[in-house]
Image 1 (tube, one colour):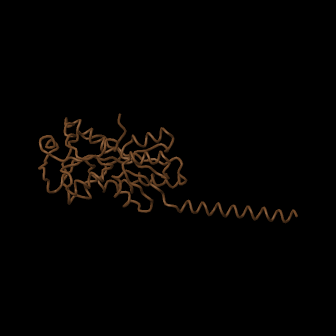
Image 2 (image 1 turned 30 degrees about the vertical axis):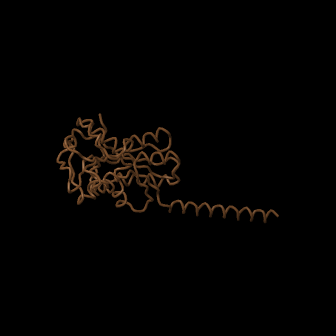
Amino acid sequence: MSHRLASLVLALVVTAFAATAASARTTAASPLTIYAAASLTQVFKVLDPAPNYSFAGSNALETQIRNGAPADIFASAAPLNTQRLYKAGIVDKPVTFTANRLALIVPKSNPAGIRSIYDLRSKPVKLVVAAPAVPVGGYTLTVLRRMGLSGVLSKVVSRESDVKAVTGKVALGQADAGFVYVTDARPVSDQVTVVRIPAWAQPRVRYEIAVVSKSPNKAAARAWITMLRSARGQTALENAGFLPVPKPST
């Protein structure tokens, strides 16, 4: 009986070990799920097409992750979104990985005749912006306030859920102008013209990234973030028009 019992125990141990090993292989082979700001769509897909991506406004992604969405990594276009999740214990400590700038874009045909941001005040325009809770929407409000142009918000015809929606409406001629990141204007450069925003009016656009605390793939997620912040990742971001990681403010 003892011999048979020992054999049974050994068989159970071997089976359990095999199941654990198989599970580990499956987990290791599973692609990462990355929730990222819409403005990162092109560059992330070029840098690494393997993960499962979900691109949207950072505010919407923050809400989804807070509600238990199965993300491994969260890349936000504003520190506010990652920091709120960090304080709630939902993501590990965020790190900065790139920066950006804002621009005003108009359709190539430029029906409103916009040559300067100040033309928004003097010309009848259909302006499209992102909603205030979306990072680019908040940055837009900062630009307008610094330039004394908050009054042009009366000319807004729609407030979009992310920067891609703003870009698309202007590129399709459904609006006379819109505020986007310079990196979003690049892919549609044959459809839009960029009107530069003065450096003194630019907000501090800083992107943060963090591992989701409940991720079952934390080692792979950390390795992916390390790759993003390496020379390879930074070169890809620079080639897409993003700015280097900003130095800490003093």
